Length: 253
Image 1 (cartoon, rainbow, N blue to C red):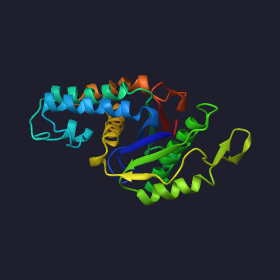
Image 2 (image 1 turned 180 degrees about the horizontal axis):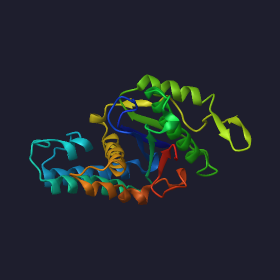
Image 3 (image 1 turned 180 degrees about the vertical axis):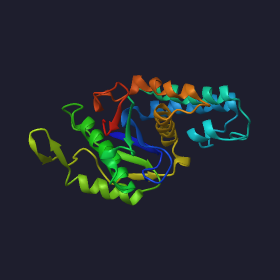
Image 4 (image 1 turned 60 degrees about the horizontal axis):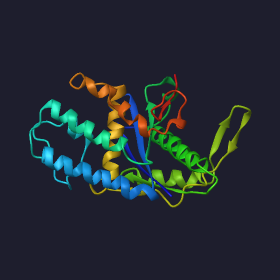
């Protein structure tokens, strides 16, 4: 079984600042879960030793970079904040068998000008769930399944969407009429988890924020623009033909 951990960056609403809504995920197979968690434990031990961050303190990417004053009780230089950020991405890139995937929605596109924040949120999640299901169903001849864990928030909307597309999932066809391709590899309702109690979701927060800073760089931390490339070794490349980083951009123009 594959476990998908997800988190968001930005806001799907049109009235909020920022032109992008990002949904990122980390896929871990049950057979490699303990190995991946072992890397997280080693990461937390290193962060405790080098930065004094307690192992139960929640890691939060935006706080890591944009937080003012003390960070987890200590004042760090800009260089140390970037080094910490890189350490988290490096740990993700080394996870055996893990895959990363991100959906990036350009809210300012003319194609979405009549779409609500709910529509944009549903679109991102539909893209993510479809690609997760495709990845599992095409993985091998042995039938496998997947389950979704997401940060708390929008719990009802995500659950309703999952239940719907397991039955009705009409996908446009280049040959004309759309086809109903219900998701058959995903089981149970999506499971909401408080990120404070999920080390994996905390890492996905870094993935999502890293992509946000790739497409909307900040003058204070220009080096963040290239850091998403660190995830190339674990990128789920087949989700997009436009890049090798497992990023689905929508709309394409």
